[in-house]
Length: 280
Image 1 (cartoon, helix red, strand yellow):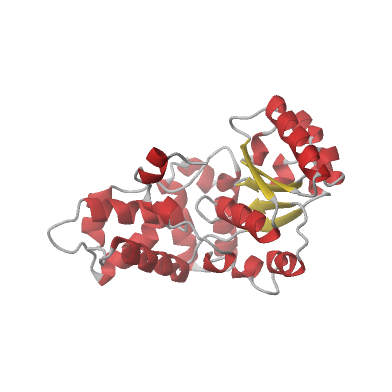
Image 2 (cartoon, rainbow, N blue to C red):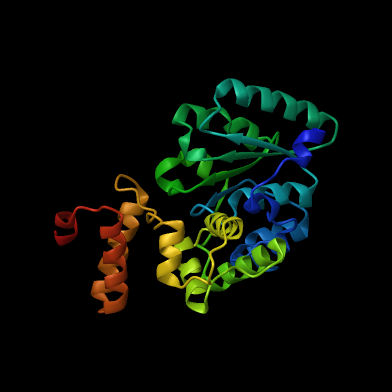
């Protein structure tokens, strides 16, 4: 429960505009629609354990929280970055007692791939016997990062990067919340969505920065880049982003898609990839 001071404290725009229902989540209709796996679970009132795999800002945490509300489960959030076995034990003990009183628990583990194999083994029995319904969130390929026994007990659902249509809807929501249009030309508006690179949270942060320090004249793409500074493309040379992008480049070249090949090449170079690796 928040205190009086917490409730009156300023909150980031991304937090204020967090969807209040699953219908308000944009860009994930393949999962949330009536025929999607999550849509069917909510429709039946039976939620199974799932792993949400997707890029930052695609709605993983929001979906988990809303699933708990729709299914009347107690929401228990946990970050694998800051938590360990002792934290898990406390949650499982509380979940067992809650279950005895007739209420289930949705255990949401953010960055679940950060738990080591022994830690993942530790919560298998509680997932299997229904003490908790697990919803894990990860930006990494679950096949590489999660143990097979856990994957066999969970359905892996892939969230998409937000496309331009979804990002435009978020821009409209930001403007409605701010009470005015963002100081952007049509070109600048398109550039804002491009710079967000599929990340709704980042788009809201940029919109808030524009609203707090509005320029004297509407910004085009060049002026916007100078205003908010260039966003470094999401790229991790040692993990999955590295392999996804080189694979996309290979497929574009094999398919003779010049524009796509140039795009993926530029993404890798802008992200700091060694040109010798690309050449090989």
